[in-house]
Length: 476
Ligand code: UGA
Image (cartoon, rainbow, N blue to C red):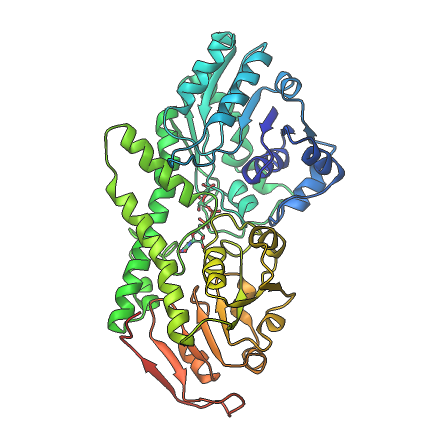
């Protein structure tokens, strides 16, 4: 198949590379001429596991880059729209980029093609795309519009694309559905997985993945409802974590207990500083707004958002209660990205927390394996210094805050960390450590939904004590 993917952001670029990987001829299109130039030269603009390998493997063969949308559409049988759908000030999705692309596609279409929404869009978008294309002169016999939502997560996007739990295709005609079935056939038949040199399956999905064919409207709703449900799961467990803190229970034990019910599941039940990123915050607002437009007040979503915002304030209260006063304190911060495995800082809880600490006149010593450059641009503050390792960031800091769940942050050399810090205080917003182990290593340790612990030390350089004092029920 010849495919054009319009938009070379996280979703578009990964989709383009993966379509090439499963055997299609792909043109990745973007109106950012500079970006296209860099992609042609081999630059990989985002931090995403396996993406550099795929781009290197297919660039110049099955994958090309272009800023000429019309020509790319003419050369393709399927056009995927993966441009941004940011939030407007009112919280609904700004679909102006989708509209603009649809108009240009309409003007380029000269034979039957399918136009597929890949961006996260509200229900009825496929209807609107069809309408603007007809108004812009496209022959109704020359196109169908489909919705093919993407469920990839940043950081594991390539694996999520190639090893999906399911593929959802929202198509209102059989002709359109059959083109999409053909596109995904290398995955749904299992053929791709038998090839040599395939990207390894690091997930846990059953293969081959099922394809679910629905109406376009249902597919649009599946995407919004999936993200809203996952965000709800996170806020739910954060709320339960807050009760755990009040009564001295352990949220990990609670999560393992409820997550082992297969109807609930253990994934996305990790409490922390709240969800962030370019999807959940934006999609929750957009879904809420869609519901309102249909006449339904989806109040639960507002509460999910409230709990999420509160989770950051609660973390700041923990910092305050561990350090007493904040002015002038040197704080080591591990993690600036909105989650581990990515350099994306959009709606990052870590960035929000750092901003609040800067307002309290703290000095921030930050380390993130991938997101420092982006954070530097976003924060633009002389009171933040960026380091190359966690230990450098911790050097002479008054406390260490863990804000992003990078796997390497869970494997720090604890004696070395303790020696670097002025005071052995760790406030862990991602529950990366076992409280008892932290106490045994001589730390005063606070996390989310678990009792705070503190080794019975008051001075630096004391020998680590064997016993830890748990302080359950501490109100935050
Ligand atoms: C999310 C969805 O997981 C994808 O399925 C979807 O395709 C994507 O949005 C999208 O709409 O494009 P993503 O935003 O990349 O993916 O990241 P997630 O892994 O879902 O994490 C989102 C936020 O929730 C992060 O801040 C993460 O740290 C937080 N989180 C996640 C928790 O606080 N607890 C958890 O148990 C899981």
